Length: 147
Image 1: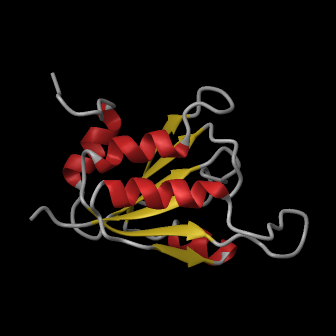
Image 2 (image 1 turned 90 degrees about the horizontal axis):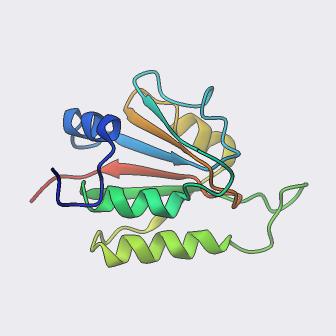
């Protein structure tokens, strides 16, 4: 029996075998997680239905289990059909959760196709597919060290 929030056996197995500088992608429901993930990445499906689970729910559980030394989001397009004039509200939620966990990290921004490249590298150990419906709600975490 575990005392902390994260209980998912596959996620725990991957986290237990990963280490410093390994990366975790928490992907929204629009992310092409089947084709844009690292070759060493375990794909875990938490996308039961639209809106379940949200990326922020997964982030809360992960922050209780692993240290995070970096976090990156997909920079929203400023032109085109999916353009946003300002940052999506989920970015502020990410930042608050990271701050509340005491990580001290800022949100790095990566252009969309470069984000796909970053999420497809061999050091991504885990890709979590969620039912998140908010656009640009993808988060790439880098595992830190336990002090």
